[in-house]
Image 1 (spheres, each protein chain N blue to C red):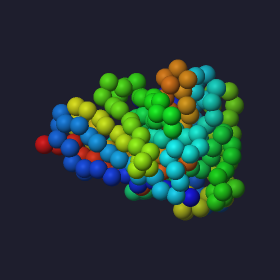
Image 2: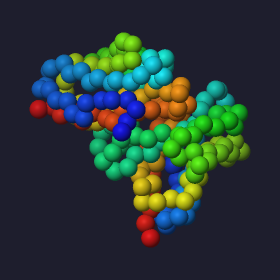
Image 3: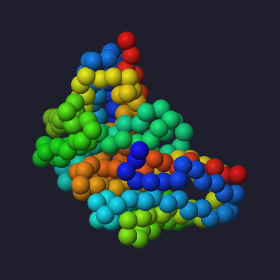
Length: 115
Length: 110
């Protein structure tokens, strides 16, 4: 059974870049026809889709974040990653990695943007 | 402001049947499958319903999903205290080329 685990810094300074990695276990990230996806949730608020990457490497991003976000794939490490540039306090949230159709989720990692 | 519209709260007593609605548009619910998630406090969302009305293995048949036009519903029958959680609907939006979510419904079991 596929499992996902997020990792990365819990604290990021304003204007810096947020970088997170999702490690996939129990299956190959490049097998099957899946999109690998990032979603976030500010404390006490709802879910926001950030973006996704297909096993071929093609990507889609939330239009509201598109200018600041990049999702990449590292098949050799069975990982996919998120980069979000020029962060502000509004980017403080729990970040989840998931597999489409959003049936498998990581446990989530809290990222706080603060000086 | 979420693209999909859910009531912020719902409630029921043990054993009751509760329904949570999710309203969208032709670019999302009207053309694509609806998914429902249950989120217990401090945990990741859990898939309850996929492809409008299908249950993953392990999800009790007390949970059911339906869709008509640009609206969908999640029904929970035989309500139990452990069903107290936040519930979210989601769908792919063809116009935005993005997944969109409802704002979530907090279910209270009285």
